[in-house]
Amino acid sequence: RFFLYNEVGELILARLSSAGYEELGRTRLLEPTNRAGNRPVHWSHPSFAGRCVFVRNDHELLCADLAAR
Image (tube, rainbow, N blue to C red; front, side, top):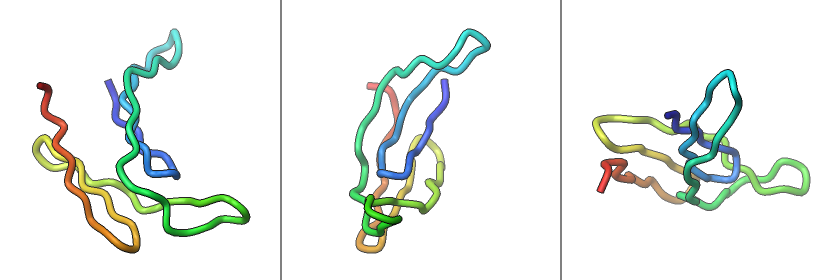
């Protein structure tokens, strides 16, 4: 399983294999605060430490717990 982070602030949990891509879950962590052309974007990279992911935009810093519940 892999964590992917896209340009609109969504964290995606996916399974990647030679058979293809399987999305297991998706959640929006932060709203984009910049624009590229006509679309909102969020280009800062996430950081992972312990069982947390840290993400930021121009207005806030967020720590999300990734521990299974």
